[in-house]
Length: 329
Image (cartoon, rainbow, N blue to C red; front, side):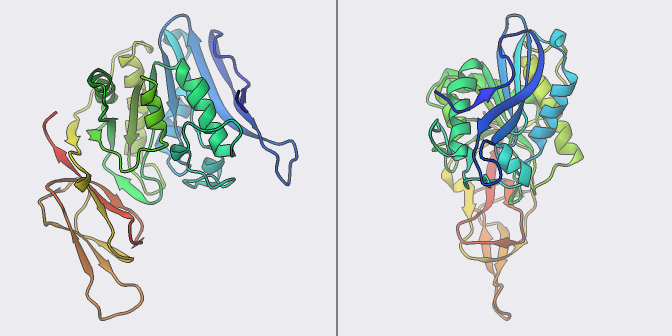
């Protein structure tokens, strides 16, 4: 049972543009719908890739790359099937917010979802129960949105199954982002990532920048990575476009640095810079008075600054910085 109905076929050869139609009754449309754009490209027998963007609605590299693929790839270019959903959380994407404006839901914490739940839960349930089971490979694009900025990386997660972890890492490496990260999530409960991996799929995700916008560089990385991954999977014909990639690891929870106070952020270390334990990362200045010294936040470990808080103001408990360790594998 699912509330969503697709307007495109999944098992017919060719290229099909349409929608995932989710009925949604609201004040200005009693029998209205949320219409999530989707493209399905199929050619004969072969693997299936499911590629999604805008799981959070203020992240744009994925939507750019997947719109390009939907336009550019022809059925004769592939062997198998490619399912493209550029705006997974379409309500949030339309207003440029991380969370859904309809129910306040965070789609990436709503899995496995509910067919009789909120709009966000219904979207999660459809992906979890219908689209993900079709797929052999899943790519879910992320960047920092309006509140974080990242080094551009593709990543895999630490998994209980070493064989599954190895194939996910190989796929993340094939994406060929400037950085390759073994990611330790700060909060994995309810994530799309966790739900996909629990079904035994090859899963790759990214963080390709941030600040609530894309750059020419981050868009190029996103577009190149999607094609490279499809070639790696044997779906798309062609030769991968190589790129140098630096391996990063997150060996412990102390990679995450949380703000100990509210205030105004003065960065003291930029993305990609090397730090040692004790290196100042940022000062947090009080915003309600003058003449008081700032609080200096220092690195808990050595590594590279892989992510940072983006806005000028921060609240207690916000992620201030993430440090990843270079080298090794």
